[in-house]
Amino acid sequence: MADNIRLEVVTPEKIVVSEAAQIVMSPGSEGEFGVLDGHTPFLTTLKTGMIRYKDSTGAERAVFVSGGFAEALPDRVTVLAESAERRKDINVDRAKAALARAEDRIGKSLSDNEIDVVRAKAALLRAMTRLSVVQTR
Image (cartoon, rainbow, N blue to C red; front, side, top):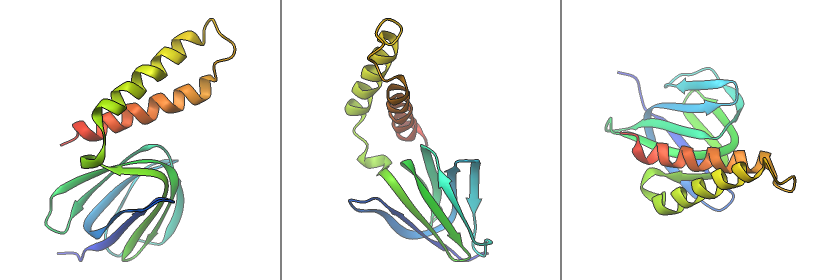
């Protein structure tokens, strides 16, 4: 059986994850990628999405990330994210409220040129992804 790798997910505010993992799947800007022990080194940008991994016991875990960078090395994956939250730390009510606000802004953008549609769509994606992370099993 392959050895575990170290997964580190860090934001400007805190360390979100620092533990051993059997496999890490991340939302790269060019598509999802997976890393196992012994992976070829690379660096990539991340898009808003979900990092999925199996911890050292084989339990599946999920973390919301909003942008950033990932570095894969043969024994480690380091993620520097703009924001990140473990599944257990996501406030579902807050995510639902953010989703409703974003949908409202996008709806109003048809009649109001002052609405920043790009920002509203980014907020919508973040809210939808947070809710998706919570619902993932």
